[in-house]
Image 1: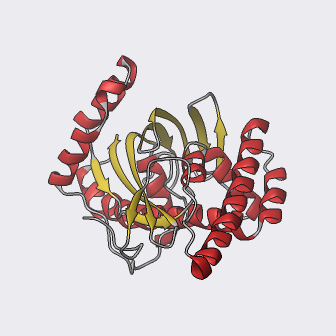
Image 2 (image 1 turned 30 degrees about the vertical axis):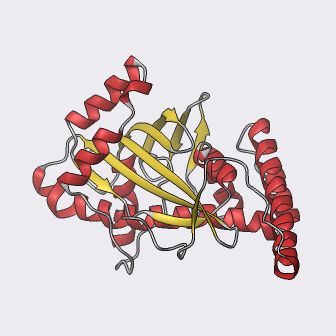
Length: 300
């Protein structure tokens, strides 16, 4: 029961929040949790690229920030993932959900409505609409709105959300590439009383969102790794993605194929370097920073 409530609470609050997954949270989290501090909230608000938004987008963001019911900075994740594939998957949530559907791990439906807009339905009472307001390799800004009509609260709940995903890319000394992703969520939820918010909604959203973001980041890393070690399997997967546009399916297949080739070249270069000292090949995509510490040593 707790897990079902947690899953629904995340849907109501984040309303198809981009990278946030829809798996139920565990009863107890064994990992660092996120934070809702005022200091982090103010820092995140200052980082929103208002100058790069059009008037309509600025109005949507300002409305949520001025009426925020809940704020959450989810625990930053460092994952090993090809940058080009990572950015593509972030900007194509319908394709990620289609992969989950093919694998039989989720019944959530996400459909593309336009170049930057998507609809979502969790088949448990929550429907929503999401749009990208700004996209760059380093920062994605999303706006989502939707409603929930189910047993969790006993009445219809509406809400809207602004999500800011910040990404940094690092290369370790061994040539492996890592992405550090950090997600800030500003949520405005209507028709939720203060008592319900404090006792039920906020605790469930915090724990479940932290877990789900961690699980989704790990899933993106697993897709990248699978492309390196199981090229044929990933190509077969691409042909089964019937819930996305053909161009996106073809782009996914091309990116995973390119990753398999680069991984093979990197392995060859590493083998040669061990025997003769040749340099590792340079990578393409978002700008990289060389890190010589452990990949899980996150910057504070």
